[in-house]
Image (cartoon, rainbow, N blue to C red):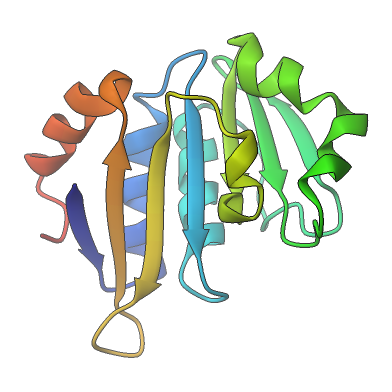
Length: 157
């Protein structure tokens, strides 16, 4: 596990951009954490790093937004999902297991049973101060090199 401390939304965004620049087709990024812990800021940075040209927050009222960046990006916000079966109508399996782009899933713990075997999970939580956030990165074998790079990248350790 790699633990990063962010002291501002701008730092969280910068970390997301760094991560997005390194993601590859087939990657599955699961964001978990309470409201206000920085999932939207991190997602915006990841999208920017993937070359997506958009501004603003998370999908919120839309379960899935598809973007073209340097590779396709499937941005999920499952906050309002009460039953993971709700994703069946969207054909989540084709996205989660298709390997064509990056799946970025906010509130991913709500559909944990649907995750593929290879996952990069980022658990966000409140830190010591009003603006501090803690991001705990864990990943399956696919993500070990990325986590090693992250541990030495100089972000708020």
